[in-house]
Length: 487
Image (cartoon, rainbow, N blue to C red; front, side):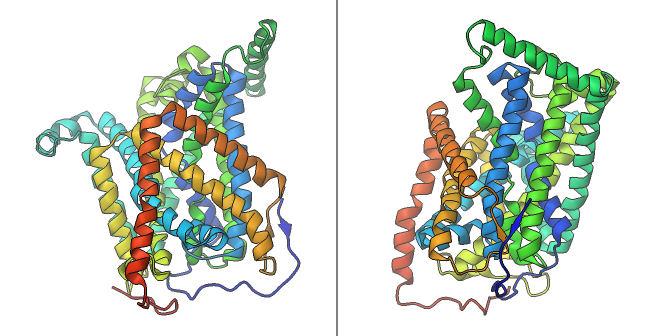
């Protein structure tokens, strides 16, 4: 439950340059759409393989969800207090200074957002090529010419198509992602309920709980409640689960397009995240109800195997199309919200002013939209799903922790600023979130040093870039905040 601040003066909202057309429902659906992509289908087996016990599988998904909710509670206060397009950029810049905001924008363009778009699109491409075997053969000549795989070509095409859709306005982009979000959330919900009902409704839940209890008792008998999983395995499982929850902060980037951001941002964010936590727990309970833990562990096609066990082989094939729809919807939402980040950075003088330009008719940031997508296509054609999402998770953790810790600083330095929403559980929950996420970052560096180091180096390269850009800009004025260029 939210906790309202005492009534105060209206929050100063930036001059409207992007069209404010999104409401609470749009915000919640954008959040769900940005989170639910390929991860729930591709990482469920990784989580099970890492912990190897039903109780811990569910514990990991709920634990990662609670961590995400803790972060969302902090972001809800920050977003309602600073309801501007660009979200996390403003949180970091206000709390820690412009260099942090610049570094975040730099990392988003090179790693976090573009890399996330590339990873999601590759997942989409792999499943679409698998669902349409003839597609790979048709693309073979182009694949040989460009020296890349058919899934990468499909992924790149998906990015271009959805970028074009978003080019023609936030309403068309939001409508597209809302439709895909409804479809995939409903399908996952049905799969989860069917899996539990297969064993007699509530009896299915009792059976999962019974298996979980048996595994924990067996662990106790051997001297450890975690006999099937070491703490190292738990960390690996959490990394996989947190990637599956990634995108939960999406709405903060589109705050400039919310009709009543002080109210609809925290509501849309928290409703969306809570819905995903419930959905993921339900789906994984169904997986455990239908499949033995041994079959679940390490499988990349858990949802297909579950559907096939429930309804036959044709249902298993149909679930592949669910993944196609899910990943395409997630890609649509990610392209929609992430392109809104670079304009505020340009307005602050940290990027060329063209990145802040909006189309005079469609009122969307077309330069940011297409520049980001061009780099994402390049990453798509040169990277892999695993290497890309590992960099995204590792680099993203640092900025999320900095933003949540910034909440403490802003409570002191901006104490008089109106706060329509105050983070529930402050200061305990934000502090616990920061500690847990930092521990996870260190474990990610240990487990995947190559990808983590590459992401870190790309991010730190932003420090000399910031110094050079500031020197170049010294003595020059940049576009006034109230006069945004159009293209």
